[in-house]
Length: 239
View 1 (cartoon, helix red, strand yellow):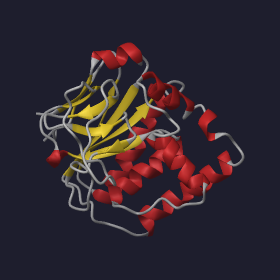
View 2 (cartoon, rainbow, N blue to C red):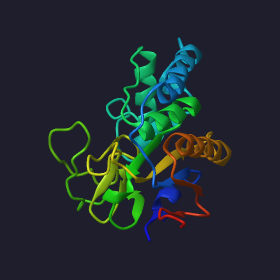
View 3 (cartoon, rainbow, N blue to C red):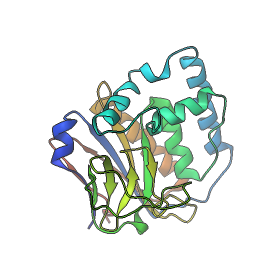
View 4 (cartoon, rainbow, N blue to C red):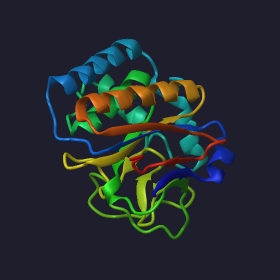
């Protein structure tokens, strides 16, 4: 049975990192409509109003990710975290595009709490998923929207399984192989927190996401938290 686990080396460098893991099985990810997009558009408007005139790079939920990226050698200006990229898009007045229910819902939660959220199709995953540092022997990975496959840089934080990288630079950009689609039936989604975002907020965001998925996509939904004391969470169905 596959697990999501965080390498000890990650907690040595980022000791207060917290992950909320939402695992879903037997869902219908083909829906659409105002029931999904309405809450997303509401969060976009709320973020525009709340952050108007502010320096987004200095926001307490975003600045820690910029520092985390610097620690593993990435330039935040060139490779912003997923939450910085999403917030900047919204502040420019660009609506977040509809992709599919799971993506729409996790973008809603990401904007609501200004935390990185992402997800992967479990049927495309092989073996355990690990959050770890890339070695100099990682295979090339074809990222979403990129024309060719390239390997991660040694030392950057990646999600990976037995076949290769699922997401580069922690939460910067995911692999095409495991992307969520309308055909996805089994998936896991991750909410990530660095101080001042802690266990309480991550747990709240994960619970809200789980409830939205169950409401709009059905299926079986479970929530787990990962931190330094509990570095592993199951991804398999509990049935």
